[in-house]
Length: 111
Length: 117
Image 1 (cartoon, each protein chain N blue to C red):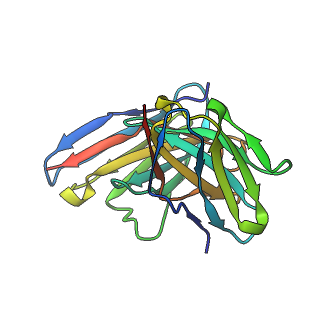
Image 2 (image 1 turned 60 degrees about the vertical axis):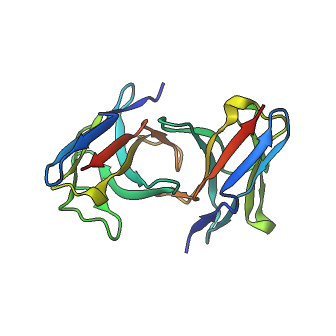
């Protein structure tokens, strides 16, 4: 069955510190992978996506993610976190139909 | 571009009443719209997929008679929660895709917080 696992429910980092949010997926075919961010009261905003090609994907707001097929992972990274990055982050996978979301990781940023 | 709006942003209703939530694609034509439900501290769960001019396709376990979806035009889909009960209280999010868009290329609305008393 298709699934997405985000092992970390809640992560706290200091402003300026580096960040890595983990995502593992289970999908029978070549997946399309996404990271979304959800701020309180707002809809999901696409940070980046992987379809094919270079396994290191650059996104908006300084985020990047690396697709590792051997590990079935698509971890999100940012070298230096800003206070405005505090939000809920969702990893998602699809083939050609519906998106399947992970349970999300809540990021808290301390000054 | 590619903005999706929802109305209302939050609604409180009494148990037994019906509530309609609108989802609009403001600057593009959306052949397909999706409705999700998000419980507190949980992921988005797809409820149904609606294509303009045809009946919605509901996910397993979603009561189609309770959650009525209408996609009458390429820019508007509505979700009506009929005879709402407190357990229907949730955050409802819609999304829309462009015709011929990338797989998973959904644009999400800001969500509607439904509280049933």
